[in-house]
Picture 1 (tube, helix red, strand yellow):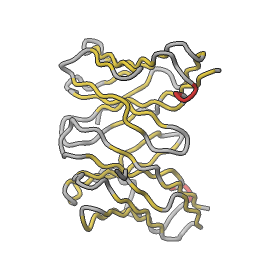
Picture 2: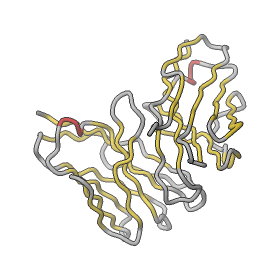
Picture 3: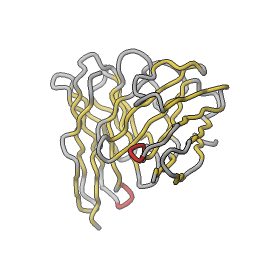
Length: 112
Length: 115
């Protein structure tokens, strides 16, 4: 199947700065995307999702932007905190069924 | 509200032994997924079930792997015989509905080491 890829494997930011994590997808028919956060020793945790009829969605301190023209997603974290240090995955389900394909993830490190 | 529960959290065994991983999905969820995570390959989908029925097992690496879901509240992933290359973290996840626009909820995984 088609896959999800992440632009950068690692990202370091200063505490209090904003973080931007990028993700490219290849399936132009994808209509739903999810961002997950995975802390060490734990399973991926749902952060925020977005449907293809939207180009922006905001949560608490997080914003996801979707650019369908270039098949690109980004996750923005405002005022990054040490607790935000984790691996972040974007997930792109194929059109049939409830499967999710994940990339290798971006490791975010917040520097105090 | 309990999340997805996996057991054991850690398993260390010698190659050739049978390994059984267990998962209890969130009550009311009717889709269940097994994943394997390694540093090299990231998170890979092995198999998923809808309403206890296996839908897609194309991710299962080989015949040594098998998965069952005898009822809505329990699933197992079995490896027999196990090999060192099976060492990984195995995650179970569940979701509410069997359509594409529902997030999956993950357990905390089983860290498997095959010596």
